[in-house]
Length: 420
Image (cartoon, rainbow, N blue to C red; front, side, top):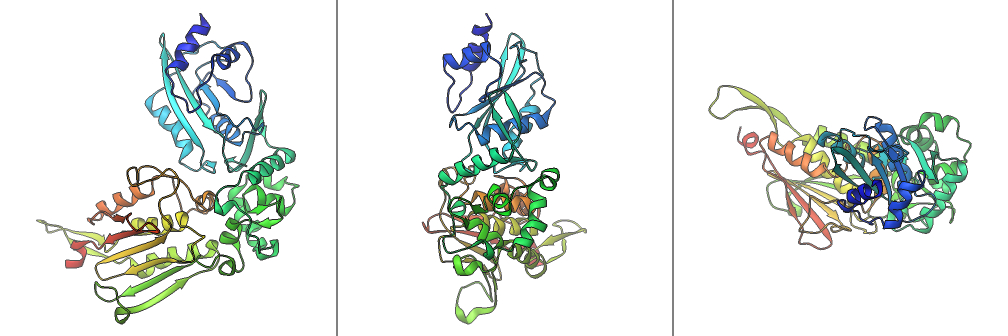
């Protein structure tokens, strides 16, 4: 009877990798395995994050999804858990809110059977291990789940190195470890990315600590491209297009005679992100009171809402093609700002699903920007920016996706602000 119930449950779930009949029998006849975790209650959210992290790391190298089943006990008794829409949303948030880094790939489903509710989370193994939850690396072997020890961490690093696919995770062949600002990494970045207790008790050498954050390739004994991008002492020597060129143009047409001033932002992203963030706030965004239509009241409006402009620039830094020698160009006209970014839509993103689908050309850079506070949630940046433009009375941003080698974002000035 119980077997039939579980088969009915799983028949309703569209997994990326469908469980077989034999898999289902194992769920019912064995204790938890390295691919299955069960829990009765939906209240222990830390446990869910740990499970998602552990399945993402896939320490046993199953190369198959792991499954977190909520609403069933270890002895397979259904517990009639209250699986609400809000609870499912909270589960889905693990993929976006940055508690699990790099961003995990999960699929969340709810099932109902004889008045009993269950939630099932499928977790796809990550290609960018080690994955952390709140700064800790969790792994699962057989029925054991816990924090990774030094040996576990080394295995995950070796597995990641062997499967490295994205440019930022590859070794920077000309660089050496002394090309990184190691004191800055240790004092300023490690505390943001690694749990404090783990950091204080850590006996791993510097190279392995860097490798656990995908900043170093221990197999080839080289910093990764992400390490050089983020903390390199001479980033432009290795990655010639890794800078931003800001150009202020008088009028509405591009032309050398119309250039009022220009500014170049370069160096390691750790410093450049802070510099461009301050520049946007102090040199581009201007706010003033604007009389509301059919009213005697004023409202504070900006030529460009800082949140939106900042989001588009940070998005360009995160997603650009760093193999290109072309920088990010920011053209600032009297009536608009254009952001020209090297690199086209990446991975699973295309013209039809943009901007509602995301993929990450530079997952390690994206993780670092989240840890440093320049990204709040993954996959919501463009939506948040458009909402900020709307709240400011500005037109929505426009995207030119027809240029093949780059993407251009146009942010038009708030017409009410301009005419006030």
